[in-house]
Image 1 (cartoon, rainbow, N blue to C red):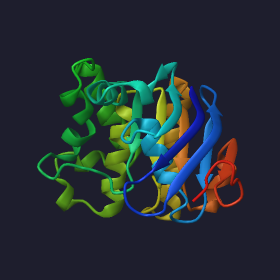
Image 2 (cartoon, one colour):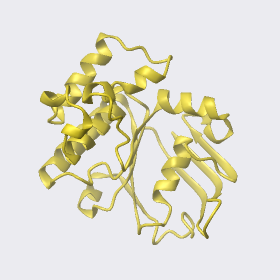
Image 3 (tube, rainbow, N blue to C red):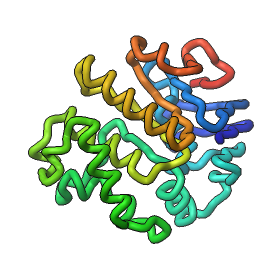
Length: 222
């Protein structure tokens, strides 16, 4: 599902540099990435999603060389194939929770907003505990509720890859377990691969594999 080879990236300012000689995930695998702040975890997710482009190297997702696509094609590919849970949620204030969940269908012509998609949005919201808040705007939701909206948005298109940047960071312990159950249940049903950045080491036993950026210097180097 993911193949990264000889990846190198640096921002235009600062001394940060990320090098990934090799990284791969199989279809349906659940991989967690841990490590100190500033080690490149979020940067790696943004590179895999095509939000950033590497200096050198190749990033393939589902057989497509994402790093080689032009900007517009990368955006279309990301919307059609990848569900991304952003650390800052990235919700649109002028849309309701329901509209935010269904937003990928508004911006991607390849995705069809039909009764099945609307039904999935409703079911995901109910399962994550925000079924009664779908008509509220983000400002009327708690941080935890906003986070659940973001997770539902990532899942609603049934993507083949979920990239999660601290998806449970603003949730209480009970809600963390509930959301992770939902994420993994939906992933198992659709054969979705999950790549998650987390600081919560209590969640790591739930994943099949863990990469620690503080230990695997061949994966992340600043």
